[in-house]
Length: 595
Image 1 (cartoon, rainbow, N blue to C red):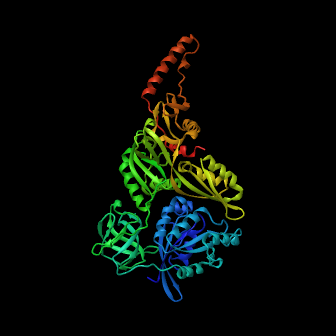
Image 2 (image 1 turned 60 degrees about the horizontal axis):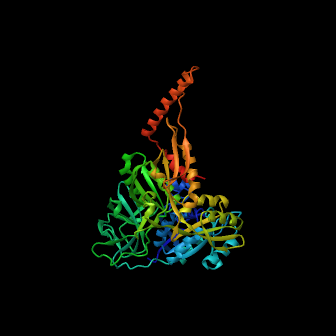
Image 3 (image 1 turned 120 degrees about the vertical axis):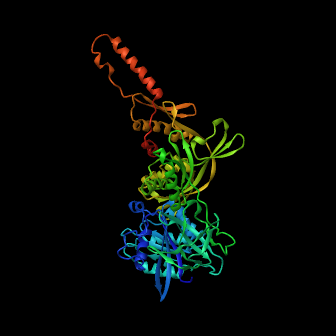
């Protein structure tokens, strides 16, 4: 056990985590030249295309230091705020962390939140100043920021460049020197924490775990504590570039177990594995449940694919434990699922993965957050969907979730960012100058306001320099109304939204204009209306496709033309009564990009 070191890499998005992981793997000869490619741990197509890490990746390296051989288990983590749950799971399986900070950009919001998470788990922190080879690096200024933030000594900060390999040797030796070995008793009953799992169509579900106490042998009879199901450990091993089987594993080891689990509901992230003969007294604590922030309905394009969509989401959930879902139905779209996501990027990635990995074509409804309604009878209802809102006469108070948002930006953009946050019903709580030209702004604002396009706007007004992070603070009373969209008097429930009363008129007007562009013309005219309760607040009309029936009545009496037009009008009226309007898929997506 003294020779094992478990550590993760935490950083803001695009500060060079994956590139640094590449250099560590090269230095320890973990990956052969033939297998090597840039960002070798980002093995999903989506990760490589977008240049972001979505999943945590585990890999074991062997490193010799002062004549002794050490096993280093690296867990590479994502940097984007929407995948912070992956980071929390990685931190739970580690004893130390490399805090990577970009020397050209300095400390960003996500760095701070991940650092506090690591300190909360008592991890040893090794600060690394990356991208030192860049001409725009500001080492002295950024070192001051790091010392202020972590309280470390200036000489403890490692100057490195993941691209050129500078400083990598010192990082490896510091991992061995500074990060403590895992603690645990090999003789105690087995206690292993499940921190991830993947689905393999040939071998069932492969579970990733970290042994806290006890010893696991191949062929042992094991059980998962929360579900109480028993299995045989058919194969156990460590995760190198490929899976590497072992016969016995002790405390502190990070590895995988294949036991022929077929049902995804039986594997829960944060669960404890123990032996059937000598079980442990209690499960491992300190693993938090995920709280979805954004909800959206997902429906199959073809109603017959409902069951396929269910199994696809279940398999995806194994690989992405922060995704939650429950079945629901909609009058416009049929049967589908109400899914909970950690943010808008998370929702986009899930949709993309369903399409690529499972060939599932889905329609996604307008995302919203969950509200709390207190009724006149004194009941408390959680509403995830606008159609679940009780009648207005039964509502006493509607409460919506609020967040504390932290924005770190250059001082030049402070005014524009304040305006943006105040437009989104935010209140400024604090303003701190970290250095002469970098400022941290703290706002309290409703979560529903950042769901749509807040992050994109923030990036564009700050020219990409502002970094944003948020955490949940609680529910507050809100003046909300339900905005419905009607097509020829029929409500389209998938386009309903719960919205702040002051923004409803503007939003309703934009929705009608957008839908007018997207809905194809029919033989009859279509009225598109936005309504709050019985009150219509905006209307647009899609004109009918006209056939010139009077073309053959050239000259002659005007009454002959009138007669034909009256006859046509009756036909159109009858057609409107029985004709229904198809809402194209783009309409559901266009709502997200109204501005």
